[in-house]
Image 1 (cartoon, rainbow, N blue to C red):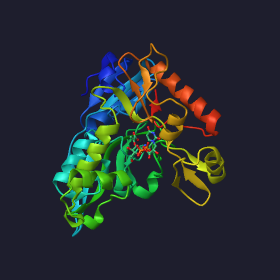
Image 2: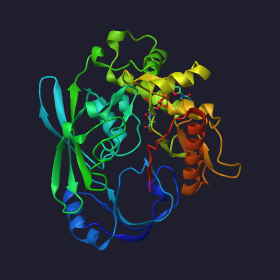
Image 3: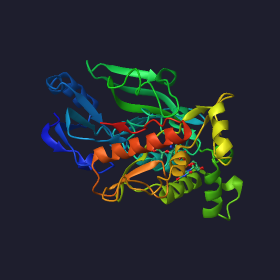
Image 4: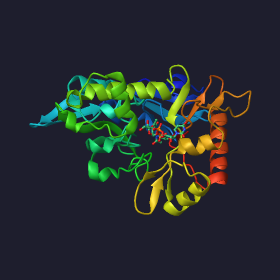
Length: 349
Ligand code: EPU
């Protein structure tokens, strides 16, 4: 059975690299082990928290809960049809290791989601997305256990309430379940016409990296290389600079508000969502407020990344509270200047 450790440091378990102690911590390596813990030890604690890769959390202090790290590994092919394959991937697998494996097998659908930090189990929670693709497009079902009873559940895609950086796991089932695996449907041997390069930068980056390649010769390998290259150039590597990717969601605003903004800022970028709403890049709003590359104050390690204003970073010495304070200053300035409310994408513990 999983060993429970008291007063356990979470520094190595959060990509911001923040120091915080969990009252108790354990790692489970099988679904059965998780079920046992939920039935026994977990009942002694007022609160239980589940930790995946720790790449989307901000720790603002010590954690009084039992923290369960999900170390369930493995992958099983469930079924194959002529053009598609269904694979069950365990929650504890590292997301990008899985993407790399899928690309090596020539299974398409994951490549635009290359290099996203975190674990497979966390991926459906916020319906990870990048470069024009969201996870929900490949999800068949999500499996897990109910936290209170340890009882297994399976939710089909349509039951997961997937939306932009959102799902039932962030809403009605928040803190209610533990995801143990995700079943994905991928395309076997995708052709160039199946590739998703419409997100401008991907198209340009493939051409830059592989100038000799014709459009027909392109494969998911080339898309992965392009996405990895773009991400490496803009997003800080948590191994060197603590961060949790985008700190805020891109806000969806009424078209009237967007028009009002363009009176002063005719160049304001936007993405159409519906007839009445547009999405604004939060990074642009933050940059306009002068926060790009700035620190909370000169002596603080809490800062806005200098190459992507949507990413808050820990330059080594920041405390979680400082990063939270920085995020509040940014929210206040963006709301004052644009009348737009930014909501955090990162989970604050
Ligand atoms: N921009 C700025 N300043 C910046 C950066 C960007 O003004 O410092 C503006 C530009 O107009 C740019 C636009 O913002 O064209 C969009 O920037 P980018 O393509 O970098 O994407 P994003 O909207 O900032 C989203 C995701 C990222 C994902 C990228 C690429 C969210 C919250 N974030 O960022 O996801 O990698 O698109 O698809 O939707 C993450 O969730 O952790 C994450 C990194």
